Image (cartoon, rainbow, N blue to C red; front, side, top):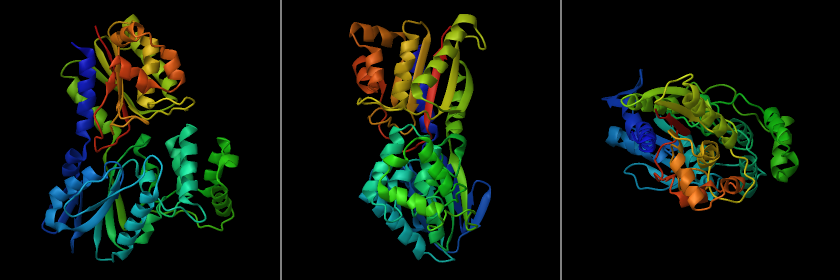
Length: 431
């Protein structure tokens, strides 16, 4: 059994299982005037508008177009790339920080939604990346100030849930504010990219509602010692919000809009488990993995070592599946991402141990500031590094895992996958 090859095949299989072309037909169908979404049905009086935002929104829109065809009245999605669709416009927004096209995308969605009336019906396609891809800052915050704030939060290893609480309170569309722009009824089909599939967090909840407050946003900024580092305009909005001079985000769900999670990390892990068990005993360990990437990696590899040493708690050969999203506190100026950092930190622990493979990859195909999804490592990776005189510690200290694995040939490159359900980490322990 080639463990590296098996791990790679399982990762790619998991990504394929949560692509929109496979998820949408399972969740959505239309017969005459009856729209079915999971177990719910909706009576459609007119054609359906299709809108959306996120890294998976184009592929989701394609799948919806294939199903609904001439029942689509039009619409627009905002993604991190552009492509021509038959009925739905595509706008390229900025990611991982918003740009002027993100504002254009937000204004397009606001205009479309506000033009609909009570008899209209829309489908909104929401996926990870939406928080940056659509944006309209609360005045006097400028786009540049919003960008600086986003970059500051990302570089400080602030968890995504807390980042989104801050962003929702600086935005005219996040935290349910976009959903208040329309009188129409609609549904939101969601591909989740957050731990626990929390609708308050996914895409900063543009059409849901928000349980967080300006006080919480302030507390987060204070906790990470960021208040004095913020642009003046951002600090002004936070203070005005605390004083009640700016309205809070909506605190109740819009009764005309229902959300459906159609794809998530646990879905991918379950599909991988089904496939893997054709070859090897497999266990889903968690879909809620989080923490500093290099430290998480040490813990994961220690489980593999324990299995090799004492067959406890599992007897090799065995495959262990982890899902979630770690963070990286960037201190160097290298190239890479959390998944490659997991693998480089893990390789330091593995070194020349036989029969232990570690793979970690982002399901969107993009890891950090690189064009790789992640990497796969084992003893052969360590041997190649020694032969090339590569110092693993130096590359890790410089957050330069991509350059390291580019030299050892251990990168996994899928290109953008059109989906996003966080990360998948696989450990296979051979017999």
